[in-house]
Length: 500
Image (cartoon, rainbow, N blue to C red; front, top):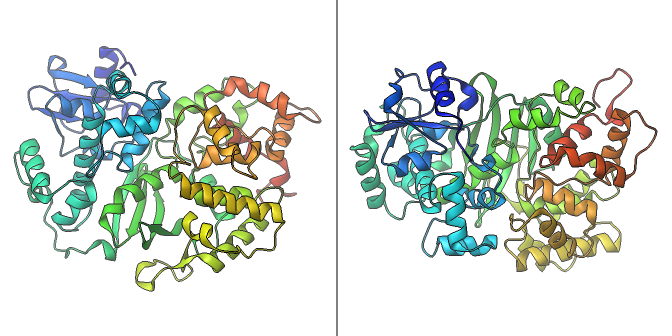
């Protein structure tokens, strides 16, 4: 992504324009520090400022993150930069730790994405101004810094959670970057230091506007019994990763433009992956102003955008779980699909110890693909073909751990999903939209989309082919157009005009 004109960047810094937060970072030569454009510190002289497209680029140039504006809390918009799907996919994998730990390498990451190592390095430099390794190192440092500032967990656990190979490496990195040990960055508090088992709380920033009511309503309508719960504006769910179980509690802080996530999980190594999934589920990385402006160029769609500014496209917590939901939801209602999902959990879900749950209504984790692939019978009263599709999905997910990862283009993703027995066009598009996070996925055969499209075009009916042609103008963000059409489905309104 090319940075805006230097004069525009400096004006944004002078006015502390929040619209540029997460889009640009400013490095000050006289202090050796890089900041967000909204930093409350006195504005540096223009000749001392250098602007970068990412925190990694600023850090690569030798600058250290500001302790006042805390770049680690900026909206994470890196995945929206430029037009490179390869960079977006690579960033999603890096956020989940693809370049952490022994055996990880840029070469292996590039291979997973189907590109050459040199090509990926070139794309990173073009769009982010930094190499993949620099981006991964900056992510580790900034995540560790956030844990230091916002939690009281011991430094040894911070080092492990952030993906550092050793505590010694962690200490050396902070000493070299900040000229002080990591313990010196933590403000003294009287509170004792709880472990991750007791729960830690992190704030994840987004770029406003954010339609929290719509996304929480969407999740509530689909909440699986014993696994998910929406209560008093909070979203709670159980979590299973790497054999460990726990839970999360997500709430909204609109005045701060962030969501607050409380994590109770016994394995600190899983924290980055949990945070990445929360970001994906609540679509925190969307440059929503750009998306809404693009979709509003369609006169028929513009009123829907104006009615629900900041409407997000919810992701899926887990790719396999979402794909199971999609198959269960074929040709039945959301309520019926939710009931069937609850039966799968009751039959095959792993119990979560009481010490690891944050609500009495949560007791089991959704079964993994490996668990469902091994059972002789899923045990649901469903058509044989649908049960066979669930079994085929579980077996395919076990055989291909990257089944729900972004790779190649959207057409390749859809073809890969449709190769699973029982997965047709609608199911593949829905999985691609919510699980794989293909933001141009568009299930054009969906009845709700066809109804809403006919309503906004003031016609009696519209075919899926007509809708696909209509949606060409909405690319590359057809998933958001679909979300607005679903939200406007006239059959979901009761006689008083309120959503059922």
